[in-house]
Image: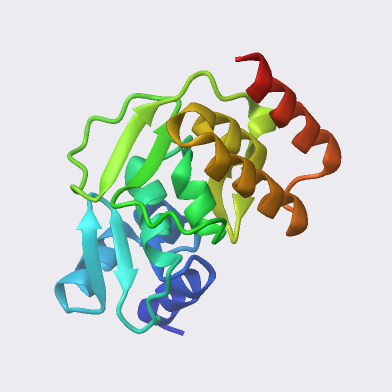
Length: 179
C-alpha cells in the first residue's frame, strides 16, 4: 500500500483532514506529505494541515480543519459547537475556536481564535471526532450573547435531543436567572 492510500485512510477518519503529525504517526514521512500536496492529491490549508482531494467534503470538514489549524489543545466553542450539532439555526459567519496555548500562525478569515484558559477539562469533549466544549458549556458561554427567549429555546431543544440532561438544564436555567 502506498503513502497516498495511507493518507486517504487517515483523511476518511478525520472528515478529509490530514495533518503532518497524524501522517507521521501512521508512518508517512513529512516529505511524502509535501510531495503528495505538490502533486495535487492534498489541498493545503496552512502549515501542516491538508484536505485529501479524494475524500468528499462534508459540513464537518471545515470545523475539523479549523481545530487542526489552531493546533494541539484547540477546540470548537460557543456558537461553533451549537452549529456543529445543528442546534438552532445559527449559521455563524466564522468558526470560533478556543485554545489553551498561544497560536502564532496566520489563520484564515473564516476563523475566530480565542484564548480560553477558563475552560475546564470536564467541559471538553469530541463530537464526530472534532474537539469541542460540551453543549452545556457552549450554551453557558452563549447565555449573554443572544436574546433570552432564543437561548431558552436552544436549551429546551438540547434537552429534547438528549444533548443535555435535566440536571444540566436546571443548572443552566438557574445560572441564567441569577445573572
